[in-house]
Image 1 (tube, rainbow over the protein chains, first blue to last red):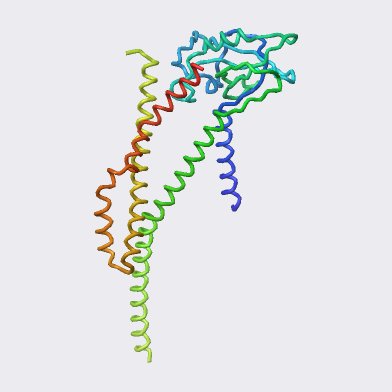
Image 2 (cartoon, chains in turn orange, cyan):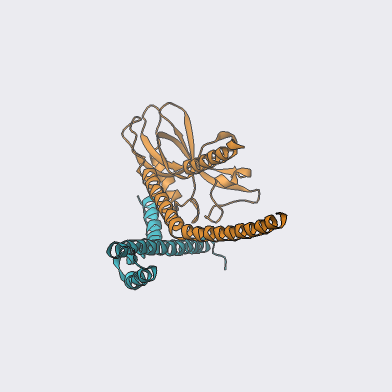
Length: 214
Length: 96
C-alpha cells in the first residue's frame, strides 16, 4: 500500500513529461527529399491531427487532404512530417501559413548527391504504427548535416513554466500560512476546549461514584 | 451564422479572458496578503507585545491606498500579457 502513492506520483510525472514532449517544439537537421499532399484516412488517430475547423478539406469517406514533407536525417533514416494549420485553441501555435511553408519546403528539396540541409522546427511524434506525423512549423536552411541550432523556443517555454510553478507554490504556501493555518488553529482550540469539558464531566462523575462506593 | 474560423477565435478570446480574470484575482489577493504580513511585522517591531485590535486597525488603515501603488497596478499586466503572447506567437510562427 505504501507504493501506491509513489506509483501514482510517478505516473503523473510521466504524463506531464509525455505531454510536454509532444507539445513543445523540437528542432531536427534534415534534408528534404519530397513534398506532396495525399488523401489520408483519419480513424482513431484523429486526435493527433489538426482539429476540424482549420479549413482542412475532408471528403465523405473521412479522408483529409494533408500536405506531407519527406525528409532524410543525416544518418540516412527517413523522417516524414505533415504540414497542417493548427486550430486556434490547441496546440497554441496559431499556424496558418501551411501553404507558404510547403512552398518553402519544395524550394529547399535536394538530392543525396547535392544535399541542402535544413533545420525543421516541429511538434508531435512520428509513430509509424499509429500513422501519426509531427507537424512542421518552420524550416530554416543550415550550413551542413552537423549543425545543431539551439531550440530556444522550447527552452523559453520551459523557463516560463518553471517560473509559473514557482509562483503557484509561493501563492499556495502563503494561503496555507495566512488562511488555512489560523483556521485550523481555531478548530484545534475548539476541539481542545471540548475535550477539556468532557474530561471535567468524567472527573466529576467518577468522583461522585467513588464517594458512593466508599 | 456559419463562420468556423471566427467562432474559433472568439472561443480563444473567451478562454483567455477567463484565465486572465482568475490570474488577476489570485495575484491581487496574494500581493495584498504579502503586504498585510509585511505591515504586521512593521507594527510588531515598533510596538512589541501590543494589542491585536490596534495592529488590525493599523494594517487596515495602511492597506487603504494599496490598490493605487505601482505594485498593485503592475498586476494589470496580467490582463494584457496573454494577448501579447498570442500575437508574438502568430508573428514568430507565420511571418518569420
